[in-house]
Length: 79
Image (tube, rainbow, N blue to C red; front, side, top):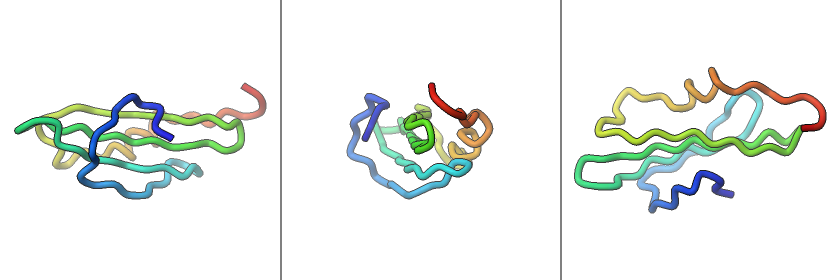
């Protein structure tokens, strides 16, 4: 499920792991020099979906999964 509101024809998609959560990473070219990268993951324990994205002209060297790992704080119990 895409909660980001970013509906592109993804040039590259791969399965990723954010902490203990399953997720996906997508990369799409949005213009002649513009790129968007999207990382989404699902925490099954509380039933929450997360989304993190960036728009850039140079996606080389960007590790959005590392950023997601740094900002993700698992929720315990009910939300």
